[in-house]
Image (cartoon, rainbow, N blue to C red):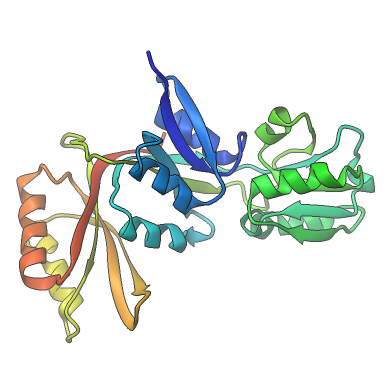
Length: 278
């Protein structure tokens, strides 16, 4: 069986690698690394990769808004969704000890979740922020200083011959990230699927209420709706909505058709897919 090529942002061993394993559990996979989420999307658009796996929302920090903007701009489809528990470790060079660490490297998301632990460390270390886990590993290895450590997944230590100094250093154990799987073509997930759309409404009183009524009238559950400013139109908004049911469900299709005809000047169906929380 040929390997599928899956684009991710970041580095081998980061939490997104776990998301890829959950999304393609029985399939040979070649993970292709990119420095930005946009480049990962573009690799699928340009057919150099088959799929992309991208984080969209964290249970502690909310939606990753920059990726939602990319989703609206890119002509890809969501074909799957997986949830990954996020656990962080304190990682150092092989000869490092926790007591001697005086500098901790972390990307802002990890820093927010692990700040209590860092402040409790015996050396009261300073903090250096970087863009992502790849930047953390690169800086740690370039500094080559046993008094420097980083925050990241324990798998990073395995991939890069580093040492796990302490595990589960996050301040809240109930930390989960939702990842979407993207492809150039949509899929039909069957009756248990969900659908995500993005749309705008007319700029008049009651516009959003009327738009949402097309689902309420058909007893269709909206599991999420979120507004984001339109980048080129100050104080105008687009709305992302997760709908319980696939586009192949006649009721769902009928509701979306009515929304597009009467209430949404612009609408895109971003995909119907199975959400796997296990």
